[in-house]
Picture 1 (cartoon, rainbow, N blue to C red):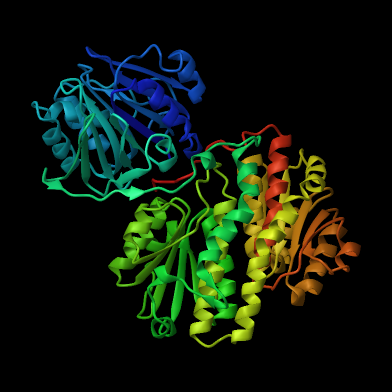
Picture 2 (cartoon, rainbow, N blue to C red):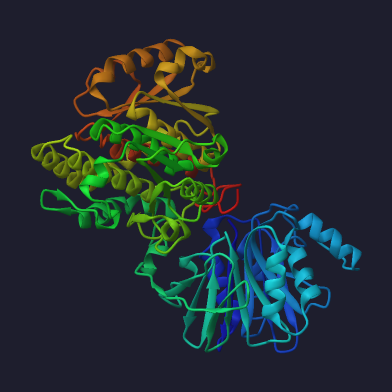
Length: 608
């Protein structure tokens, strides 16, 4: 959530700040601002609304000269969206400027102290406390003032700070909120996420918890909270710059859906060698895999839905008991992590606050943690015992598509590896699974090319008020994701239910014209699902069915049928999700919604 960009160097800072912030719009925000040192003063422009308002106010940065600056896109937490509450924030003398991601949990206590000392506040934010606290402790040494403030703040923060007295220095500070820094040609840049810096550098440093970076045009130094110098190694980012651009598509979301075949293949191909699954980053021998007694999958949102699929796949293939937890609830239920428990934490960004907290809780209880993440060098990637990357590339749209699909592939690969090590599948069966997986990219592309039929169907339901997704077994997992895709980008109320639960209350909500999406890809559950379809149609529902080729009986029961190509029963979710993604997308487009940046949502949720 929120975005930070900072620059010090030989070039004009404002255009770089605005460009970097534009690459972070996907993170979600309701106001934006920049502060630039012009050689004499720190000038600041900020505004509620989209970044284009800020660009217009500054004539794309031309009216704010200077080679040192910081910028921010804010998502309101403390204080409503407004010009005053937007970042950056200044001290009273306007000699210190700060931008902040995160939440200062003890800000009220700090604010009361500062008010007693004579400080006046003009905003409702917790961030303004930081600006005044820096002023309070500043005695000519920025580093010392920053460390004193760090010792007194509780909560999470990523900070970009400039001091008028040090016109050639930019400071970056981090605790529990992501922040990266890198050298550019003739300067240094900081940002909340990789897309903001790809245009300027491919080698970045990931700031760890309670670390500080001090940058000038030609130097970059790192310190811990005790002001002690530390050494850091850079990470090279291989992402294609063009991957962070729309490339002729109307929306990033549509572009990323069309990137799924390649992303899926990029995720599995390095790990398939002939008729063998090789996951080198797993760092587990077959003996260690055989000693696993339980798997706990922990995630949020779509990653959680991938985990629900993973439960069915692991238990069905490898015969290992699996629990799936929402990361936001994991710590608070006092989980039992016995010997032999493997915790798998799934996160696209690798910075999801609840998932990161669950990882740390698992470590505190002695469990081994495997991270499945998309962003190289992210917090979960660094803190997990081992990490398995999904090679989806940058995903800009808030509603995940290709990263989710790659998470499914990663879970399939792990389940196959575990199944083989535990002797649950034969070499012949493993070979068949591998061949099925290799066909998935082409099958996904085939479904994507069927978009016109789905668009026509979606246009009939632009005015829908309630949509229900139902499925049994592994199809329930895909119903959860299909429902989430629809609600988060179209703002239509949508829920997913295990189809067997319809009679336990949900069916009372079905009325004339209600749309029900029924997912039925499990052959042994066809008859039960068709019975559910008949039940809701009898009560006036219109039924959209997603099922396998050859399931002709569903034609008689449902109103509209989308067929997916034949694959094995564990991989069907990778195909069934495609028409549901397209359906949600075209509904949202037809309703005039901001598909890539839906209201109230952020790409990376870095606060609890």
